Length: 386
Image (cartoon, rainbow, N blue to C red; front, side, top):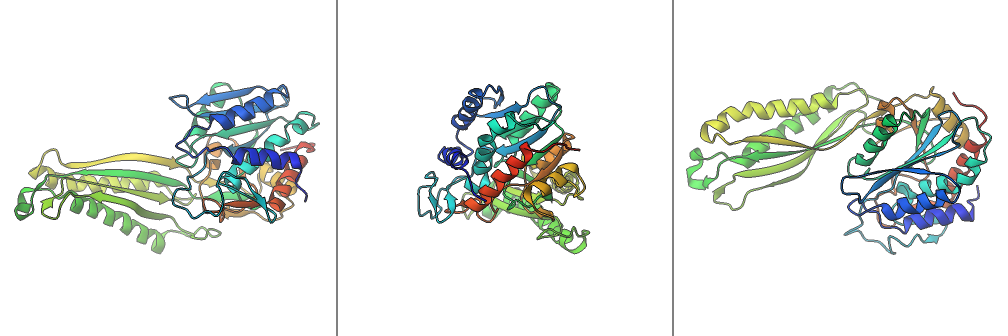
């Protein structure tokens, strides 16, 4: 399937914008806003607290019944320390591939969706099309939560949502959740020859780390399997650990970060409560030595799991438009669970492979982008839904 020059140009334009999560995404958001404004389409922007980032929501087909969302995140992961053979912002097209940070994950999808705006506006489809482009997905899906809240406050009730994460254009109907936490441990320092007068923060932290590991082993041994996932059970792991200042000083402070990736059939809140309860059970002995000692937990991100259905109308529509008879499950987290929890039937389907996302020399094939454009064109020609 041939990709149109206009769609490729828009995808390249977005890839060339540096929207790493710690940067502003306003250049990209304003570009799309202005592009749509030339077509007479108004955009709703919702901002982060310091107004450096924004979500964009726009409706094509005002007055039609509430329609289908095309959802994508505008931020990317950084490329520091990666061995790129080209400028990550070059949007180089070579050997049938579009290279650059965010090309697969997931600016090309956004560019192709926006390239079809005029066709959507002229469409005879009996439903509206909505663009929903968010910030800070890569660090916790923070932007889309504000976008969904704005839709609720404005009484906008879309029928369905297609999240364009890279699935090789195979509709995905489930993924695990991603829940990350930080645990800070306060002990009491002392010379290492006087350990009974101290509370060793590293050792206390290590006990909780061990509990996280025990939970991981229990998931692997005992949790009912969810076939279709590469790892068909929930997982837990510790990603960072910091503490101590010298070999002969009992450490007062320690900090570690950990995560759960829960099956759609599991309960991540219960997992976290188990860790907190175990930590709290250690505190009485700590406080006997140092009343200020203890544990403090901080939520880094909570991205709910997603479970759709092969029988959902939006899944059947995605299969029809993509030409795929099957569905799949994906290992990575997306915004799909948040849309689903807001009462919006959702499927994940977009160009490219997650195996290229976040990698040096990230790319998406032009063949995949051609398939995505054909998907969009088919959506504009759809005569019924639901």
